[in-house]
Length: 375
Image 1 (cartoon, rainbow, N blue to C red):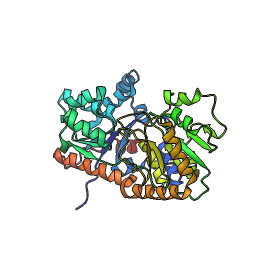
Image 2: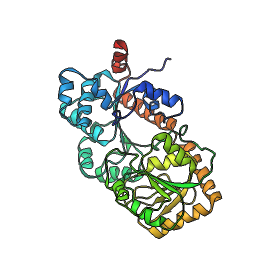
Image 3: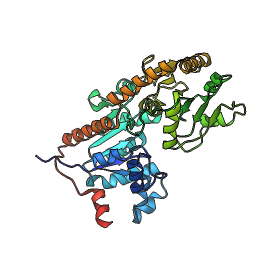
Image 4: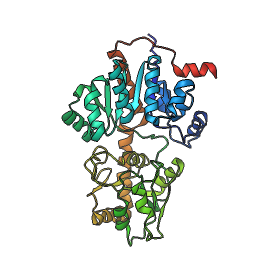
């Protein structure tokens, strides 16, 4: 029996600053960029991102120009929903607004939501009211999952736990001298504590702050306001290729965090792991699913300058131990967190959602085919 080829639409916040898709594919093929197109290609999914909206003309296109971009994306997904077998929403703003619109209009469509931090504030308020219309909720934080189950009351059979992925082919061990350490990321980073811990240590370090989001933040600004940075520490955003080179040179990676019940830092932790590097990380309430203390990295108490300094000196002065932890970190990625494993898990949930709707036939040619036919 021939396997049915599904048409999927993914709501995602990406596109404005990415290269055109054909250029991106060339970069990926030449090992110059992580495989960001793998998700859409494997799932046969169109990405409804900011660039997608630019191709919407006529009355809808004119209206969207006056709306917040996420709302415009949700409205376009609603308009196109019958052209697809399933909708994937990547992040809470998309998933919750889309489901609210479905509920208000009495419409139904197979919907898989990828949620990271849904159990707080307005997102939790909205989730309580719309979760009945979401077929599958996929989450990668056990802390957030427990909150969704116990505080919001979402039935356990609607939720699937999934490991957050990394492109383990792009981020991979590279043999080179480990002559520095590396701190990376922006959101919820406690760089003041890290800089205090580094005082007097003649250890070369680069802080790649501002790599995760484009806008200025209080975390990146906390570094820029410092006028006492030692000569051994440099600061600045890096491209994906530059990040890989820094991971390769680092003996280990430091992720200093403010206290949070979300899993801030997980992307950078997994990139380091995939490069075969251990991670020193603040032991927050939410960062509990990836690092094994003493096996793949070292946890230190949040805001504890002395403990962070001690951990940095320990791994810097014990390169064999850093290598041992880094090798275990890479094994973790290969066993649990590859890009292929993540996409396969999402694909299975998409299929379950379609089957639950009784939608076992193709529902339309999809926008991908429409665009191809006029190109």
